[in-house]
Amino acid sequence: MKIGFSTLVCPAWDLPTAIAQAAALGYAGIEIRGLKGEFDLLRCAALAGNPGLAKKAFADAGIELIGLSPSVTLDSKKRSRLDESRRTLVEHIELAGQLGCPYVKLFAGEVQRFDHHDAALSRIARELHELVPTAVKHGVTLLIENTGDFTRSDDMWYLIDAVSHPAVQCCWNQTNAGTRREFPSVSIPRLGIRIAVSHLCDADFDETGVLKAYKLPGEGQVGVARQIELLRGVGHEGWLVFEWPKAWLPDLPDPSAALPAVAQFLKAELSKKQVVLSAYKGDKNAAKFAAKASVSVPSN
Image (cartoon, rainbow, N blue to C red):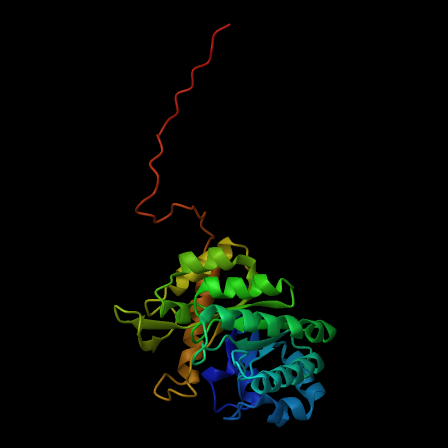
């Protein structure tokens, strides 16, 4: 697994600063979710203005461009809104192709008024399926992130299984799943190889699952270390990306403090010896097996 960070962590930085800091701190890649307060990536001159120059800047620094993350969902019941969202995603897919960027991420979204959870899921799956040929043409994989009303792993499993194409995979955010009281021991085994990118942050929750405060990975209740352990256990070879909403919560630690601490934490976790995982590890209801089995061998 490789480590990276989202520019949502450092909303005031321009692209050269983000690339330089990634190289200095030992990160392998960057996910772009806005630059210098501009979240319409198609209007970011550093990316869309000259994709070839941006691609070269990443290559020269030895840093990978993990993906583009536009503010797009496919949850609307209105055909006009869906068409607009699809056009936006197509433009980002085309830009990602020019940048040599493997992923374009979108958000799962919310259940609209007078809509139904399952109907919304089916609609999202249909729209994702329609985008597959464009993604394949440009060598891009679409990532759906568990957000809004679709934060559980069974929702993500349904979407990816319904599309059933390698050009659609999951960006898994365990903190979002924590708002539904879902733990890594449920999420990671269920999704397995469907996870291409894991968004890592941490948080504290109240007893009902309401998120009280964001924390650095390893300092909250999400169980980030266990999440990484389980990802290693299922053979995950994708990205671990530090992401939290510094852009909207300015009181969160500055990137100059957060990014070095997170890099150190992630490197330490990845350097640990992989434990042998068991279906019963930590299970208080584990089956009780006999210590020794007595086998009768008939005599000749």
